Structure formats: structure tokens, C-alpha cells
Amino acid sequence: MTAHDDRELVTARLARAGFVASDEEAGELVACAGGDRELLESLVERRLTGEPLAYVTGRLMFCGYEIRVDPGVYVPRWQSEALAQRAVERLPHDGAAIDICTGTGAIAKTLVVEHPGARVLATDIDERAVACARANGVDAYVGDLFAPVPSELEGEVDVVVGVVPYVPTPELRLLQRDTFTFESPLSYDGGADGTDILRRAITDSTRFLRRGGGLLLELGGEQADLLRDDLARLGYADARVLTDEDGDVRGIEATFAQAATSTSSVTCAPGSGDEKTIAPSSIGP
Image (spheres, rainbow, N blue to C red):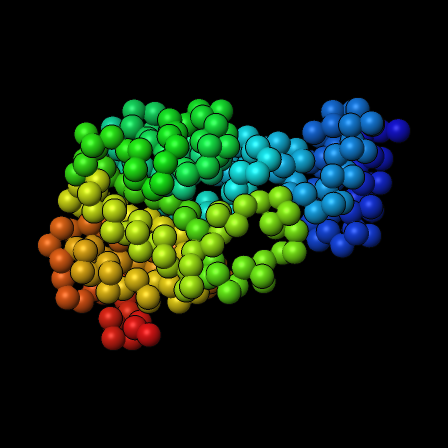
């Protein structure tokens, strides 16, 4: 039996179990097994339990780079790639960046590879995540947000980026049923409206960002509106809501200007590349 035959059989099994991307996933499982039929069967059985594909294969592709993924560590999503690419664009070749809540270190690794002359530091509260990030070649440290970041970087950082937990606590139950069988709620729970950790990140970033430095955080829904006043009060300017090709909110980008302002224009930057400015009064609650 050839690898093609194996892929067809695995595709059929996954499809019968309701996996939407059955052919693509089958290809990854067959490739991971490397011709070992017994191993392939074990991998398929694990996937059929709902275990994330990245845990089963131990890897995934992110921004074109292979990322090691250890069990229990937050699995990077393709939706975060645009945030990572924007961080790459904002980081000078010899600059400094901090990736908070780094997980596997996917964003930090992307920055390291794209800017080998830059200093990229990552943090995560989960020791398993930090170990995984280090295995991916990232300079990662255990600690809550900026707690482990050395004081020498205060006021010197060009980019702070992060996929922090931002799912509202009441909406955790709406996630896929197997999510918390394999992943930790700590990777998702953002408090009552999902902004608890986002607000902390916005506040604490001001200690480390240089004037003109960029803040890039993943978020969703109406959370950008909820953060508008915080951004203005803390001295951020040129806030932009980042959206994907379908118009769904994926993140926010802002520039640290130090001098706080009373209002803040927010630019909507859709995935299509078009931009429009939204008046402050139109984005409030």
C-alpha cells in the first residue's frame, strides 16, 4: 500500500468523523508517520479523540516557519499570522521586541528569523510554554507578562506584541467542546468582557516601549472600542483596528507617543488593504 493509499483511507476516516479539512489533515498525519503503519494508526486514533492536530504531529507551520508544539501549550492559530507580520514590519533590524504570552514562541520565532540582528525576548506564565518556546529557538522566560523582562529594556523597546487571553469568561463554553480537554483555560480566559489582561498589557507596555514604539495585541469583537479610553489615557496614538479579509476584528495596533491625549482616532485596516478612519465618537460603547 502506498502513501497515497494511506492518505485516502485516513481522509475517509476523518471525514466520517466530521473533520472538515480531512484531506489536509490526513496528509499531515501520513507525513508524520513516515511510512510506519503502526505509528500512523496511533496518530489517527489520537486525532479522532479531538486532540489538536498540532499536538498529534508535534508541529505546525506559522508564517512559513515550522513551529514545534508541545502538549498542553497554546496552539498558534493562522489568524495570528497577520499580527506577527505587522510586528515584523514595525521592528527595526537592530531593534528590540517583547512577545508576551508567547506560548510556543511562534510570533517571537518569526521576529527572530526575519530580524536576526534584533533582540527578541518572550515571556509566558506557563513553564511548559517557555520550554517549548526555547526549543523553537526563542529567548523565553517564565513570568506574568512583563515581570521577567530586565529593567535595562525600560523605554528601549520598539515592539510589544502578544496574543494574550481575551475570550470573555461567559463565552468560554462556546469554544469547541474538546478545547479544555487538551488546552488550559488560562490561555483563553480574559475576564468578564475579555479585556482584563489586554488592559494590563496596554498599561505595562508603557514602561518598556520607546517613544514611537508599537503595541500589537490580538483581540476580537467590540474589545477595541472598550480599550479606546485606556489607549488615549496612557499616551498611545494612531490606533488601528486590524481586520481580516472577511472584515472580522483580529487585533489592534497603536503607537506609544508618551503625551496622553483626550481622544484617539482609530483607523480600521481591513485585510484587503483598504483603510478608513473612524471618528472617536463612533467607536465608543
